[in-house]
Length: 561
Image 1 (cartoon, rainbow, N blue to C red):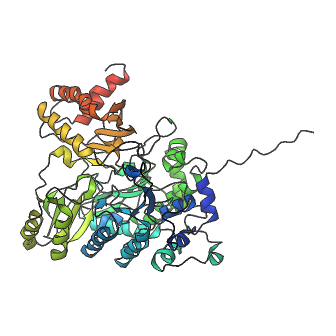
Image 2 (cartoon, rainbow, N blue to C red):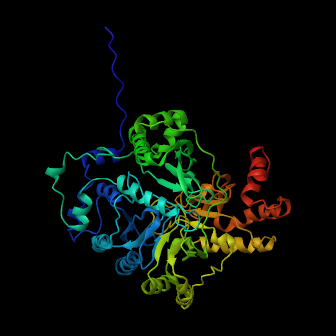
Image 3 (cartoon, one colour):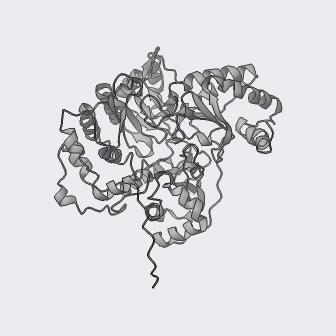
């Protein structure tokens, strides 16, 4: 007699087992914090720490001498909004416990680098005292919900920011472990919590991280198509009609693995504002229930969309949210990036956009941005907003305060005119070495020098005032969204980078691989003939990314240069 046996169940990843065993996300974090004889956490707790907004790292510059354990703490500011008081608390904490710099992330957060274990709880508790949280800033859950930070670009900015803040609360994990460990300084009673199941995420949470954002056309300052879940505002004047739903974007990939790739989100349909929360929960549920839990490199929602398609996703959202999606409404993005300098708001006050190179707020070489900002915030108390391009806005500045703020910043070497080239102002880089354990090559530390060489090259070919969006990452995970840039550098190995070309000004098109491996010192030699041709062949007003897409990449795919 022949009997058929069911195929073996697929083997889940180690992370799935950890989450299922410790659904409170507490692990043994509290015990390790209380033990002064150890300077780092176990490999298991390393994974749980992420859900609390913490990455365990080591200083890779010192590995040959000894492994120095350090920690990165990431805040969560929905829409990038924080008060002057909260900013000053962050500034104080990085001065006391971190490396005395604040780093603005590409998701409108702060990162504190270089914290040692003995200062970890004090940092997080100090943030909580200032009404700042780090829970779910990392981990297999909804990350920081992004929204357009810039006043005066739309009368709906404040409304959308409020929606982002509310949605962030709705999508937060419900575990009590965070407050118990970091605020109360106690272990969670596991006997009371062993059966805990998160009401939204379930016992195993999500297969991987999940990113949500809002955008208001025509300015795509959020890079909306790079998110798992996106809401594009559809409005008539100052009236919000609803949102176009975008699902399935994401940047990360792995070198040499064709099953991983960056992807822009699909436009699924339109819905009314009243259904926002239900639709968001529906898409989170799709990732929870259909994401790959057997392979973390294939676990993002973008792969579900790539394999199952838009029609399937639309039907799932409708069934889960209990609504009928309408066809997408027309919308158009024209550019990405920030408004820098002084600009008037609709209420008669002003905001100031300040360029922050690579998002690093620090004092260096006469440019004392960190101290200048602190003095201005202490004296004038403007609201602060962090942008997805790693810049900073001082918001709701009274007209009488403009000159005094400019004077205070100027006394610290900071000009409100942002006197940098258009290409430098449009650039981004991830932190990479020495803190990121995933980095294959330098990024933040070499990007200023790379930009200087590119600026010199632009002068050489007669394009001195040209804006080219240049982004760099130290690995293929794509934290600085290099795959949407006109020129993207992605770390391949120490001192070597892939070069991607052909993103567009509106940040709605992926670029494509141009060179597989180029030494750092050879980058400008690769760009020189391209920029020379571009200066000679471009059509009126044509951008470098569009020219590359039209002239260079089509030639390359056809077997040309």
